[in-house]
Length: 496
Image (cartoon, rainbow, N blue to C red; front, side):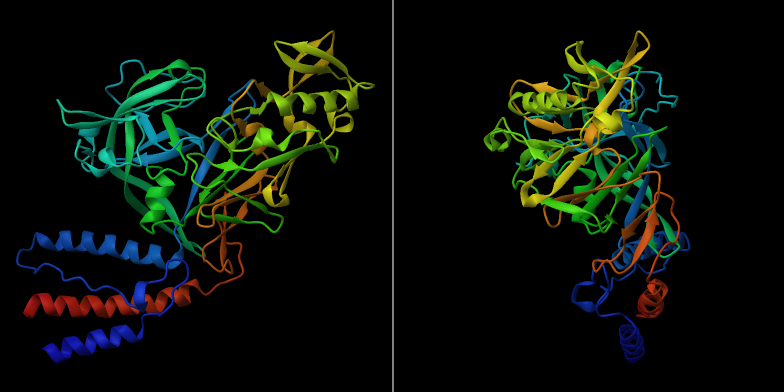
């Protein structure tokens, strides 16, 4: 019997690829785990469930694990002023609409015990509340949990000794805040495994259950079920999943700025030939870039580069959770002055509600200049007039357009949705860089499913668009190997 088992395992090993794209199998072999003996008929379903989970892990390692999210919302502050997506949490899974926020780390949703959370939303969505008691896979984090005691957590993480529960309190830049407790539970998503291949997958993640909110979070005007933090911290979902090899260590988005908005969000790398990259400032709690200069119609403005340097209270961060864009005064004033000088003969400058605005009867694209934000490595981000100008009113029948850039007296410059929309953004965390390119975000995009980028799928509208068609050829030998391994394990557990 031992010789038969050895023969099957040896035969299976022949069919296992030594090198597998995007998530290579360590050492070129599949780990063999011993199953529990089939001593009772009731254990058969448990074994099947275990095998299904194992197969999902194997396929994820081979095919790359790209996750495609739908996106709703728009950057226009007069309508929605935010972008959001859906996540499925708990068992059975429930859907939650959560704001896409690269400026924070934690995923949190409204808890059913929240006393002041909004009960309705003017965004035409049904609000949901997470109930830990109704999820069969939910688990609360105790005070002794490594997440609660880890040095990577900031002062926002708390512990309630009376109930032995790991809690949190967060304060956002707009003055709003939330507090609650941490939960570990299943997140469900559709994973793109390769050409024409989708798999229903799940992974256990840690997220927050909000029991108290303040500020704008309590208002129904833009109420959603929570916030989906995509920051670089260890507790962000992208960090949790990529650290376990479930998804790549990269995510991308393309936020549509016109019409009804929407866009694309993927845990994976969008491929676009015109992408330019700039390195991230290392060891920062946010996605900090080195902004070096600003140009108007190609002319570099007289701004001291030191005002952009990253320090405790300076720097430039990329934040999808911010609707507008904010520049320190030393950069804002020269920018506005340059724009006003160029349009002075065709537009009437006015100050409206503290913002620089203009009365313009012609097309703004024909009159206003483009603005270039130039980063380390020479990467330029071009912002067109239609992107940085907001139509706010009519005065005597003439449209009023206001500059969307806002001034901060001191502190951090923030690149919000005003400049992020209508562009592909790739957060390449593995190589510590961010890339971008102008793009029509109503179109689909190609997303790499291999580290060599020679194989890709279409996201946004999940369909085949690609060059490599050998995914099935890669998966077939692995499937044969898994088949023989399971025969070997069955004989070992049944008769030995």
